[in-house]
Image (cartoon, rainbow, N blue to C red):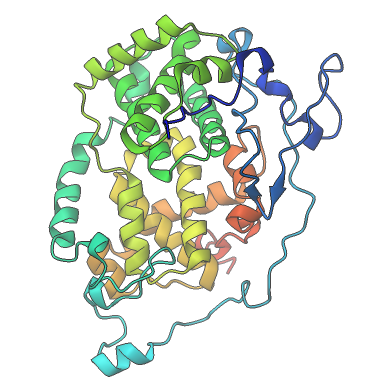
Length: 395
């Protein structure tokens, strides 16, 4: 069989403006002169295999590129109520040792080897027998990741060097790219690498505001080439930008970005640390989803660039634990494998709780809408860890 290119099923003569793809989901049509399309066929959050893969909606058009704001109507939250069992929403006050831990003599709140911990929800075999866990090398790998993460960080105040863009424009761009990433059903690694490439490039290269969306598109393209099996073609990028850029502009920006970054694409993002730390926390699917929801909220916030990726991952794990269990669950095992204590994480965790509380408000709600679906277990509706931000007098 020949290899099918990504997006090849979307024929150019059948393409429509992205802003009208999902208007039927939002009720009133903001553009009365444009006909609505049918909604995506879904079953429990999974697309039909025969359905055409639509590009992301709500592009930054050439008109809006100078303003970096979106005026199109947002899709409201899904009207369907989550169908969850009572067990799924249970709040645990404490976690007891499993029978296997008691047999092995593991004491609670003591560091344990990762090989003795329960695998994540995606793992189907024990870490010791699963070759993908590379238990012989995993400790050395993460020591190396910790050593190298400083090279992929940017200066928190780098935006001051830009003369035509600001922090708000970056947030709008990242929020839009999160929706593009979700619509294309790309890997989680791709999103984190995309944002990393954007920040590292903007730190070294001045960009005018009308080219900022082009930077985001090319960063997504490069991240897809590095992480994905099926890579979007250039025509897809032209389409989702509402033809704001030409093919030559995209290819020229790709060359500029690669040369500016010296072709350094192998960087440890918060994703690799978060997967490791969640496993150390013996997480389940609910905890995993909430942790990713929190850390994606942080991707949009420029102020969170002051924290290294491993610190962000540890804080997201700690905050998710506090939200799910209702109390702090940062034991010595988590501290041992992350390298951070609860006292070190509390300030960052409180910021995450603030982002969680305001996720559905304001204009940048892409992450909230993404996680307010059945595919992600309606994680956006879960209660934040309010007690972390309460003062002693209000508790």
